[in-house]
Length: 378
Image (cartoon, rainbow, N blue to C red):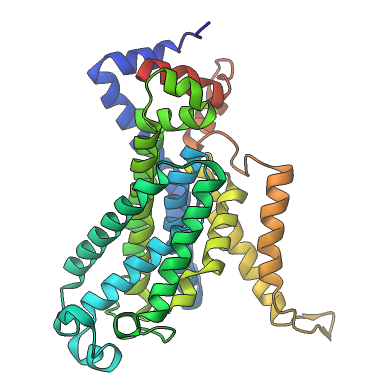
C-alpha cells in the first residue's frame, strides 16, 4: 500500500507557487552551506600569511570538484571515478585557447586545427572550454546513463584513463607529460570564492528539485521508480552533465590560478583525494561535500608537515614519505566502516539548524521521505 506523502510536498508538487518556494528554500540553503567557507576564507585573508591564502585557494578548487562529484554520486548512488577527466579537459581547453601567441610558439607550435594561432579572451576561452566539457559530458553521459552500479563505475574509470592517455600521447596539442605554461593568471581567491558559492547553490538546487528527488528515489528502489514512470536514465544523464560542468569549471579556474598545468595533477591522486573528501563529509548532502573538503584539507596539511620530518622534544624524526596516501586510504576505509553517512550525516546544514530550533518532533528518515515524496512529484 502506497504511503501518503507529506502535505508540504503535495502542496509544492501541485501548485506553481510551491515550486517557487522550493527554489527559494534551496537557494537559501545553499547560501547557508557556503557561509562557513566564506567565514574561513575571510579569517585566512585577514590573519594568515600569503602561503595559507594560496593553500585556501587550492582547497576551493577541490571544493568545487567535490561538489561536482556529489551532484552525480550523491544523488545517483553510483561511484564516479572519472570526474578528474572533466577537470583536466576544462584546464587544458583554456590553456590551449587563452595562452598568448608568443608562449604557444614555445609550447605547442605544431598544434592542429590552427590552434597555435588562436588566442581568445580569458572569459571567452572559459565559456568555450565549458562548452567543450558539456559536449563531452553529453557524449559520455549517453553511455553512463544506461548503466548502474559497478558497471557505471568501471566505465567512468575507463573515461579517466582514456582522457589521461590522450593528453599524454597527443603531444602536439597537449604537450604530453611536460607542463603546459604561460596560461593567463586571472583568477584569485575572491573569484574562486564566488564560483565555489555558485557551485554549492547549484548543487543544492538540483538536490532539492524534483529531478534530484526522483533520481535518489530511483537509486533506492529502481523497480518502484520505474513502476511510477520515473525516467532513471534521463535523470542520470542530466546529473552526469551537471557534474561534468561543475568539475570542468574547477579545472578552468585552477588553470587560470596557477598558470601551469600537467597531466599528473588530474589523475589518480586527485581522484582519490576528492573521493575521500566526499566520503568523509558524507556523499548524501552538499553539506557533506563542504565538510569533507575542510576537514581533510586541514588533516592533509598537518600530515605533510610530518612527512617532511618534525622535531619532537629535541629529537628530529625521519621523513615519512607516502604518509598522505596512507591517510587517504584510511579515511575512506574508516569512514565507510564506522560513519557511512559521513561527518555531516543525512541532513543539510540549514536543515540541521532548523531541527535544532524547531519544537516539532524530528522529521522522518530522509530516505523514506525521498521515496514518499517522489510519488507526488511524478
